[in-house]
Length: 246
Length: 255
Ligand SMILES: Nc1ncnc2c1ncn2[C@@H]1O[C@H](COP(=O)(O)OP(=O)(O)OP(=O)(O)O)[C@@H](O)[C@H]1O
Ligand SMILES: [Mg+2]
Image 1 (tube, each protein chain N blue to C red):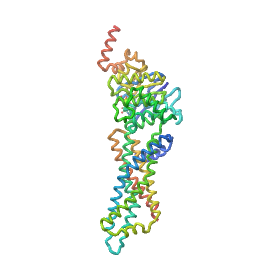
Image 2: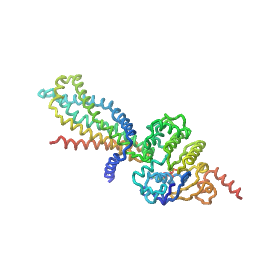
Image 3: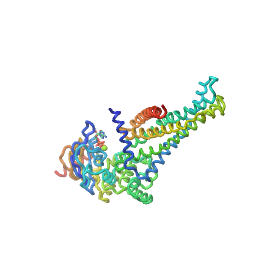
Image 4: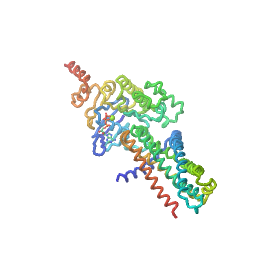
């Protein structure tokens, strides 16, 4: 019952977010600030994780392909596929649900408990548009973060091959260029856009409608992380079935 | 002028406001007093439109809130200033930006004009050199004064203050009370203050509404609150020893 209620309230929130838009001159500043906080601020951790996990994916693949009949360039191929299809869009999004998601929930939640949201509403400002819409726009740049994750993931794989002596650079490069299906990139970016929307709105929902004090802000961040991850995993399953299964 | 007609408000099973009616006049400061938990904040938030009463009606200069369109409600709210119990300053903005915020949202003034106006009201609340501090770097009393500056910067028609001087030393508290009184006179606005502080009652408050358990237990003028025989009121008013003595002296004087 309360789940259904929350889902309904979530969709009402999304509709409300687009109503009564805030003045553009103010909105522009808010969007720039959110791009800085949510996108630029995440690049470091995303780059770090992508590079090293990319390396690990490659090592694991290489160690599992010890049959001499299987060509070495398959290491590059498998690395590319797993990074572009799953690791960069999905795995990084779960990390972001922790980083960006809890930041959004706790900052909006703090504004709720200290009555800053009431202060906005008293002034006749649509607080949902003021607070959530700029995050939604900022996260439209999220595919840019994922592109970097893809690039660095593959680069990490390449470094692992060279430094670990799992094959030649030529084989790896042949592998990552092999049987390239452009639709896979489209699939990855469709997922990325959907996840960006989830990352902007679910944590906002848990922050905006929270009740209580500082302790509850912490709890709301945890709940928000759980449900953002669940939504990402489920949507990943549904989108993969819809877009890739023939 | 704000007319309140028989408003009720419940949260779940808890019946908080149980039918309150009163009027608040233009150009006057009215005080809503009562014990902690008596429903003062809930009452004020109903007046602000943050809570919708379950029953009853609130009229602003003759117009019922519930009959307004969304646009009219927003225009009405743009004419309200509110000082929250916890100040509710935007903590991502400097003090100056906080005060400029309503102007930014609701006027077409240039940045220079907005800064000039914000500077003027900040001086009005005796804050001269804190413009570029963040709210977290300001003391509680400074935050209250910034909140008052933000509430009055766009020349509101209605000013609401939820315990504007709670947690302040008696001297600063009086400064703030008098400031609100002066601003009310100066701009001829309808001001409503929540308080449980009898010192405020002594300083300001041309009309006093006494709430108890979600009901209006008494209302009247400042002079009358010290003369009334209503036990509920005297119980509250004379809970401190100082006021007990004052009352005794008054009664002895009367003979
Ligand atoms: N949003 C809410 N949901 C549920 N109950 C509430 C809510 N807001 C207030 N209450 C309840 O309403 C009652 C009155 O609270 P209110 O905040 O109006 O008291 P108050 O008179 O302002 O007290 P104080 O002087 O301590 O500020 C309290 O019992 C409180 O628990
Ligand atoms: Mg209160």
